Image 1: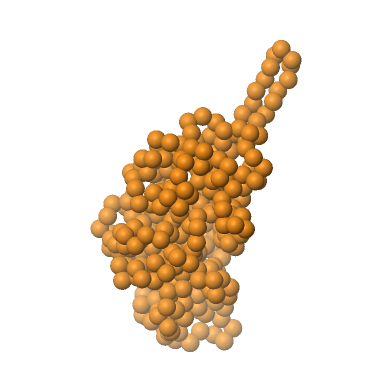
Image 2: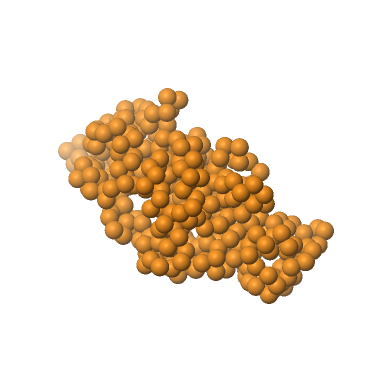
Length: 336
């Protein structure tokens, strides 16, 4: 059975392996042992409630309970942009009018903004290639919303997700090559590493202060604005199904889109309810549900068959064991 559970320091070897598999441009999963070790410790502290709610960063591991192998990772950051600005480019339309010739011209431009401060971010979603079918990705993605539902006041009313931008067949980012590198003048890998391993002061120092007219950007870089990486198309579809929409913001390094959804509009949570557990045998016609614990400190999530009648959910012993619950404990159930 696939189980989503909190990550901790002991998961460092598995997380490093996933980071290597994720490849270039996956900024939230850097190939940096020290950074990942700090991330895992912060996750453990976040689940334990020993850090301020706004500083919490929860990392979730997708584990095969039969083999013990970690198959994927995802994360929920309670609030971005609290210790340092969280910069994006907003794709805006700038109108210019000339009374002399009585004509108006509209120009698309990239404008540096810091609009996301305090928003909750769901991200770092990555699975081993062989697990990208059969529902594992959807389980892992939706478990993040069940986590939010277990303690909604720890999270913002706005939830955002940044998708990896487009990379060409040579594994180069056209947006980086054509736009961002002109300002930062670093190799992509170095800038990517500095995002997660430094305080980000270099972004504040070097990012463009004035609008960049899209018409002046070369073709490949222009076409990459707001375009999702080929490996991120499935993640984008999952977000759209959940209720996320394009925000008009893009990443300042690779041009990937930022999508947003209201916390209380997340489909998984709108289609969920809390029920009490009865450990037994679900009806033969029982359908799979997304099930999770309601206590964030002991969070677990699985996809399993359950029979739900009024406020009681009947689940089998294996499912109860995976969730760490017993008779009369409460769980959250979603069929969205």
